[in-house]
Picture 1 (tube, rainbow, N blue to C red):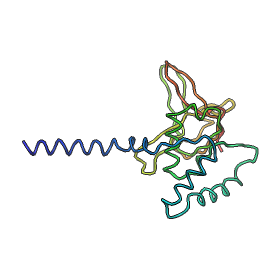
Picture 2: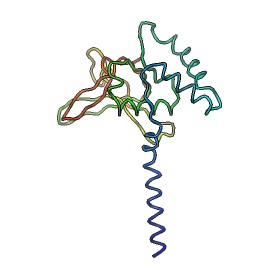
Picture 3: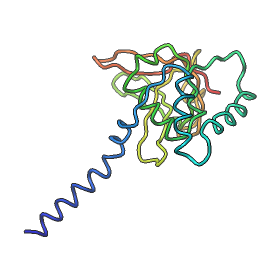
Length: 185
């Protein structure tokens, strides 16, 4: 009888180990209403990491400034954050979409698409894995202009960087988030 109880407790512990990946991010929840908030979070994180997060962001911004046209104003640049910070911020975007509506967001991740057999509509996503690659969040996007799938889209699973305006829409009484008027950069 004791062996069965020990086995049962071991199974429960393993279950919570696997499920814990998603719940850990709830405790890390932060909300950024502007780029100044990102700087504050990065300064606080500086003491937790051996290399300054702010320095890493500055270095990455220098590299991306040359490749990004100056007329593209980005409110939230997730490509300048660490994997953990990106995943946390995407989580915040998904659970608090009203905070981000109308903001221009730049993200980097893996291209994925989904075809709805019932409606015939194709949906496109930028998937962002967390630092341990155990959990993935995705943001739907719609490219600006008229595009044909698969001709005008990247290969499934390829690395993409996309910039678009965050918005939401209702479908079957559910609210969905996406980047509208998006561009691949």
